[in-house]
Structures are given as structure tokens and as C-alpha cells.
Image (cartoon, rainbow, N blue to C red; front, top):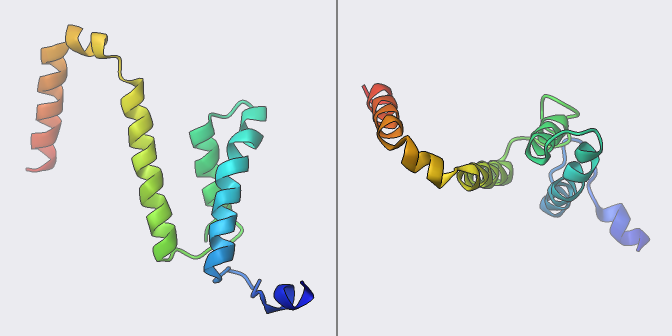
Length: 111
């Protein structure tokens, strides 16, 4: 056990992929619990925790390929949660207004 602990590279920023993965999983598990105690939404708590361990916070992690992958998965998760929040009855009620608004924003950004 001591040999295993002595072989771990715990210099900051962390470079061992196993430790990085464990830290990210720890944050995903405990950040929502901690931030819900102070009445912060879970997703905002995850974002704050990510900033705290990143290069602009405690600098525990560098922005490498694994962090970019976790960030992409996190972005997809946020978009999934936003999709769950859409009220389809309300969308049907205001149908054309949403369609024109979305179409104009789409065309504006690709001009």
C-alpha cells in the first residue's frame, strides 16, 4: 500500500489520468450535494466547482484532452436538461412566434 502511494505523482497540476478521473467523479458526486445545502442549483454548483479546480482557481487540473472531453459531455448534459424544461404545450400555443424567432436568430448568426 505504501509503495502504491509513493508511486503516485501528486504534483500540481495533476497529470495522472486515474487521479484526474477520480477527482472529476468526486466533483460530479459531491458538488451538487454541497451546493444544494446553500441553495445553489446543481448545474451551477458543478460549473463553480469546475472553475475552482481549473487553471483560474486552485489550478489542480490543466486543460487537456480529457478535460475538454468532460466539458463537452457537460455541455451536452446542460442542453439535455434545457430540453427537459421545455413545455411542449406552451411551445404549441406560441408556435409561429417561436419558429420566426428561432429562424431569424439562425439566419442572423450565419450572415
